[in-house]
Image (cartoon, rainbow, N blue to C red; front, side, top):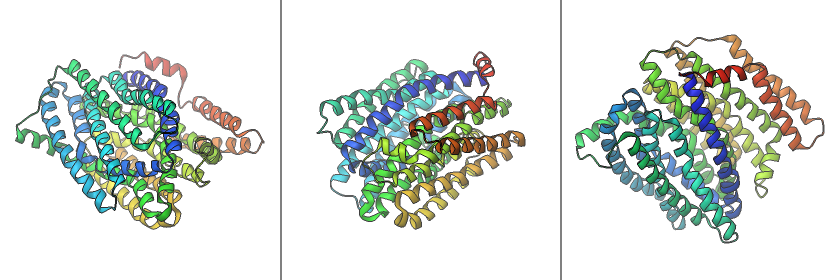
Length: 479
């Protein structure tokens, strides 16, 4: 299973690294610089949609992936019922989203933007549902293709609009382009699912069957909703609680969070792939230790490298990407980058607990995250705005990650190797010392950035977190 995972994650990572940086840095980044603070309003509304996206998914994607991984033949029975449930939930989502937006004080043009954003979420959630069926069948390369097809289409469409209509591009065009591209991706995804599993596009009018599956997915829904609250409300709160600076501070936070989403891309892809793999391994009572160790050895040192780079070069990086934003943008990036090691731990150990069925435990942990995040943000954001929210995000993610780690080890009786744990601490200290020395030599910052990055990646192999020969051997394993 380690070999299967390594081959597929390598394929998916390479595929995403070819496409998503282009989307993030050449398209999304350019759109923000082109439309100005309108992007802050767009991103706040977008995150509002994400918070209540639980009504679109209701945990159905995770439930489908885990259930189909354990018993692939169930897909033909599950698909019509879950598709019907999703249709009903989509109607409820759209109504509730506009009610909440109105209560929060959004009106006029903002509600027009929200209408387009809600369609984006409807289509994206449908695409994720189709992908969950593909992942549940362990067709990870196909799922990898589906994970980038929407972005690939948007690169083409938005790139054309940004070049041809350079001075006329608006945030409304950006929303419309996403709707068109997601629509094409959803149609393509359905035909791929149909070709793999021989399902038919039909709804289930057996309300009892639909409700039974919805009840089964309810714990997943509660978990995803709570996780959305402590990971996505900060953008909305920054925009709403920063007074006259709301749109500007939301733009700054969106710029920093875009980079966090980018660097967390590999962890999220690994988590999506690990859920059905962990589920299958637990069902067969296989040893998980080596696969967990492989994932941690890849994600954790990389996340420490990101923290060190952000510490020394946060102003330069944000100034290069977003020259028109205030100087506080660098501190926002640093705070969010410090959350990355915690996110890496969460991606592995929360997925493990999900696969093991410890959903009520995870809900309690996520509830703690919500209380920490919302409680502190309401106090901090009015005075410290985006910078305060960034460091609260780091604190929240750290509390949640350590909780997932502790309980995963307890529930699954995972061994603690102190020598292994201390090696990560030594890596962080040594890399920090190298960064300190390099930053005081007087070289151009970009050259310093490259040297520290090269040193950090080299140390991953020198300290044998990863071994090239062992990794090559792993890729050739059948399991």
